[in-house]
Length: 337
Ligand SMILES: Nc1ncnc2c1ncn2[C@@H]1O[C@H](COP(=O)(O)OP(=O)(O)OP(=O)(O)O)[C@@H](O)[C@H]1O
Image (cartoon, rainbow, N blue to C red):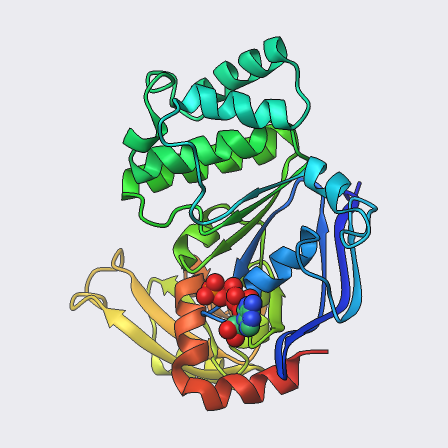
């Protein structure tokens, strides 16, 4: 069953003076999804988040959050959507526990329930030992964990996290990401995560939206992004076989969609020792894995493995922007509806 859409954005636009910060943005996010908002500085991520929270009014288009219009129902949206800014503010002289209980009270939660929820959350985010320590003495990582607990105390259905891992050490990042992932999977929490840290986004996001100059350039999982953005980069398939002669390579080159097949590495003893393996690298304009596998096997050659190169987000981002601004703007016009 397909999960319900909890965020529905259609043709959303917002300008500051003559500058279009968000330009005809359409995006749907389903319940329980972890969605990554990715893009360079000034791409329009924060402006979009502010409009989702009802803190900024769109110039055009529509936003629907949990069936509500954030501009008209900002208080109700705020009750059900949690927002963690990149630098969350706490009462520095108050302990972590006291800060959480204050947030709970401000959200109309009774004293006893507030205490119980705060204790449980501090444990969940790994701050049990630091519960009675002043927030001012927390490290950056601890503050982010406290921030996450602070967002969760009102039991939101959606949480929006702006650069949640900024300034945290690698171990802290892994733990925070695992926590966010667990929350989403176990409690069906919908998570919107804005970040510049591509490999982190890739670790936990189900889908990613790539923002450039106020437009959504591409969205989807890694496979979709690769297809949408790296259109002129060949698909690379590596076949591991027991031998590769000219006839085999010529045959592969003749297959439809294959742009080039060549031996990538060859064990020096490949032709002497039948057990040695040879790697053939095949560049294709489309995924020709099936045809390649069939051809190799029908040639009487043993095929041990066939792998398609997976591009990571870092690589997609780097390759896509390798052509600079010029390429970015051309693509924007071409790929955005
Ligand atoms: N209050 C404002 N007044 C005028 N211009 C603004 C305002 N807020 C944002 N902008 C401009 O709108 C564009 C989008 O900014 P936004 O903060 O949404 O980008 P972002 O993707 O969140 O960037 P970052 O990753 O740096 O946070 C930028 O050009 C920015 O300078």
